[in-house]
Image (cartoon, rainbow, N blue to C red; front, side, top):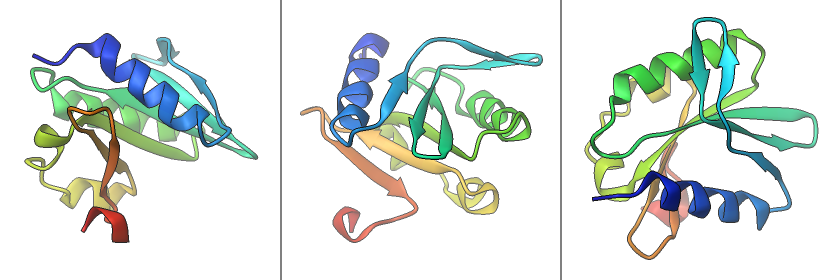
Length: 118
């Protein structure tokens, strides 16, 4: 069973190691909320973190809402095993990023695919 606290820790470590500002706390957007945001130089990315037992469809709706509220990017983060089972068609259509975290705490970009993830 994957612990949400552990996923939060890994993703915070991942983005901070790139020199980005990470704020993982509930951010209210209209009738929904996202789990946090990553802030870069001139851009903001909405972050929604889901354990394998969470509702991914709801998470996609939350990310779409974040884009409507002015976020530049959106990312769904879950375990790598779970991320590989998710169909990426909606990520392609909406321009979302899908990240998977493996058991060693390494973050993999599942969609859009990168050279390292192939």
